[in-house]
Image (cartoon, rainbow, N blue to C red; front, top):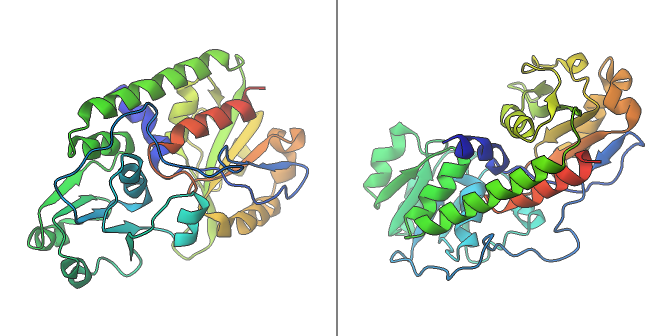
Length: 300
């Protein structure tokens, strides 16, 4: 249970992407897959399943789509939160997968027209109001919205319970090895820039990321979750800031640099600020690369 909880933060669609070094004080992270094509494979090898359902619709966002593709299952259609450009940046091969949008809500007529044999979704996208309507279209299975459980439960549907547990255990081992290499007593601050209700950027908490960094042995600053726009409390030696998609990079950077007290933060003065695009590594398989990258960035 604890492992699944700790692993969840990296499966929200957390990601790394390069938009260029904007100032001497900002490091925008280069993903490990940037120099070569990325294929979605398990952390250990196995034989992809031959699912009984050949017309699957995925209603779990980019994370579920990436997880299905990683085990050789290509759904007929998939619901995503962001643009197909973000899928391409993450090198997710969505060829022959019809992309459904979240912006206008689920189009039940469009889903029915696809004549699915199985619909897989999460409560993040399948509300109780539309659940029964979807069940009238095809068999519907709802899996956990908590990312590690989502991965395990999705694989369970196709007889891959043991594979999922092996992957989780392998990742847990990677975390343990990384933890042993972190320097003791190093302080890190974590935040997430997101759009508010009115569309304006604001600083928010990244609670799941804090959980993992704490497990890895970092001292988190502040010790409690920062309040909205509580920039001054982010006084760790290093500062990791998540933003949502490449299009938000420049606005997020400009917003940060305009905030009172930004230039006086310890991480800014030392040049240890890392902007991370959470959208470029969706799904379970991206988290190992993310942990490796965090080790490179913060472990020195």
